[in-house]
Length: 471
Ligand SMILES: *[C@@H]1O[C@H](CO)[C@@H](O)[C@H](O)[C@H]1NC(C)=O
Ligand SMILES: *[C@@H]1O[C@H](CO)[C@@H](O)[C@H](O)[C@H]1NC(C)=O
Ligand SMILES: *[C@@H]1O[C@H](CO)[C@@H](O)[C@H](O)[C@H]1NC(C)=O
Ligand SMILES: *[C@@H]1O[C@H](CO)[C@@H](O)[C@H](O)[C@H]1NC(C)=O
Ligand SMILES: CC(=O)N[C@H]1CO[C@H](CO)[C@@H](O)[C@@H]1O
Image: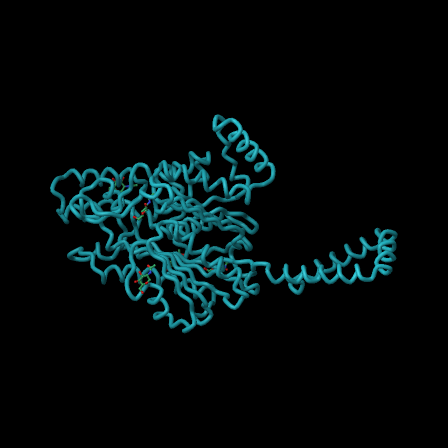
């Protein structure tokens, strides 16, 4: 904290405290003073080293990092992917040799937890319904431009203020990249640093915020504003084969895009939404079963798809426990931490006989925002952390309304908390995401302002219908 940024009443309090201490400690200070004046060398050395230490500490102190604001893309109403639309698409394509995969997809769809209001990519609404590169770029551009336009308009950040652009898009990497599409469209500065991440899976929304955090904390404030764009283009990812484990993604993968401005500019703190206080990423890919749990490959007929094994749910549970072990000591309040550490020690002493307890994360956070790739994953997270249904409600409702939009989903969920007016200044929020690899990512946010109702909240026309009674 800089002294110049202290408000007046704080300065007065501080001065009062110092004066009071001097008066109370006067007898002791006089003795120390006499000692120091007679040992001049010690005094000089101590003062000098203390000053140097203070300066070093001040210089190396990382800057606080804020989320200024964010926007989510809400596609137009005529792009809704109802059950009937999805079903007709499958029937018309008549690609399948039997009715079996069709029935399988119908069942999955009805059990998936998705409602009839999610959004499909543009090509599904065209005459010949053929996915092309052009459609895929259209899908990506529509989402990116809508989210970034809205974000720049509400944050009053000019394109020339943007120092870093981080774009993440799981399975679509055109050339020039989506980050170049953004630089070209918004005419960004020539010294802007861009990062286009692809293939990083569903946790990449959280990990691209983590990347912005790492860049901004230590940049000497030469770099102030990072634009983070989290998107996906599903047009080219439709799976045409008949392998069950690969058909699942057809049923739950949907259109979505989000953008955020991350900043370390102290002048913008007062207009920011949240401060990022912790960030943790763990990678569990060294374990073969975790690595293979969600895998893009060719089926036995040579058709490419993403296969989701049943093992995914187990893997998510096991790796979440490992992730929590590292996160817990950093975020838990003392009383929870003591109990947890005790149970871990007992677990080690008893040779694994006594299972370590699951710390109560609701004591450390006011809100938990879980990445909601699928119904089974949400249920597993709820089981592992013993969360009440009310805690996973935003995740379930988000899956119902928007489907699995991959990495951008955590932002749609964040918008749910705001639309429901559940957050306020000072609240702590845990954002948790899982992704292929297998990766787990956590961001811990603290709200620095009371959120105001937003016109462009993606829930703005539907929030009154939620939460739904079913599951
Ligand atoms: C979506 O609509 C179909 C019929 O059009 C219906 O069978 C299904 O239950 C609906 N899904 C939800 C979640 O309401
Ligand atoms: C974020 O944007 C909205 C406009 O959509 C604005 O009302 C709000 O003040 C902005 N900042 C914060 C901290 O919410
Ligand atoms: C969500 O969709 C993405 C993209 O298809 C997939 O990689 C991921 O495994 C899905 N998540 C779940 C839990 O099904
Ligand atoms: C909801 O947001 C859209 C833009 O995404 C806007 O055009 C519309 O006016 C908003 N509706 C309400 C009721 O705020
Ligand atoms: C990591 C990654 O996906 N990089 C992509 C960045 O953009 C170029 C096109 O400019 C792609 O070819 C890369 O694959």
